Image 1 (cartoon, rainbow, N blue to C red):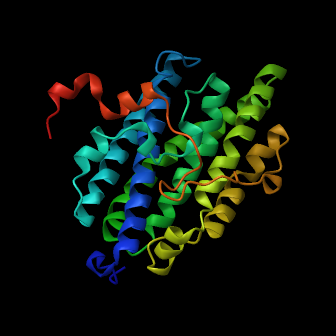
Image 2: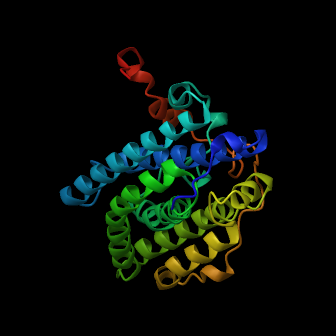
Image 3: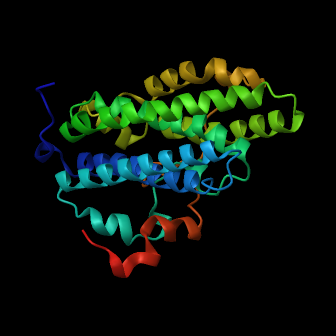
Length: 263
């Protein structure tokens, strides 16, 4: 696409809307990486733990690339990455707390990581040049997450263990409402970005997402078309209510290694 957006043409509201989108995607990927990293040693097999490590590295790398896009808006990404309080984080709310079990982690691979891919795809096809040039590589790397998540989801869904299937269904049901709200945002900031050609309309992203997950989640008895989005919405951060736990925030900021930061 040659008709890229001139960010200097954005008014204050447009700049704030683009900043919100970038930060939301970056924070979500940073937290997704942390949640994957929790399972490096607790996954069902050594091979799966290695896969979790690989996915965590992907997410952290993608987050850094996304944070760096803030420079296009005249922002310094360093304090955004390392100095914010948890109340300022714009990550998808389904990542606020650690996944309690492997079934929840698998659900997140499908439900949460799947939503990230849909949002990134919409961003990549828009008029913001850094997203158009950098997001396709992220999406290519996300294909591994998709395939692993789908394989494990089917394995647990078809398991002879009623506990495994029940845990998977419960985690999926908990995660879907905040994810649908995040993807389907249609507030003023979201409408501004659609009008500028930066991303797709929220309803279009939700439709693509439902199509992507419909058959898979049906294997645990969930009709995704009957699931409603979470009602509460924080327009300032572009997410539902709540905030990530303090431990996750300290890890996301790199507090333990603050004295060793090298940019």
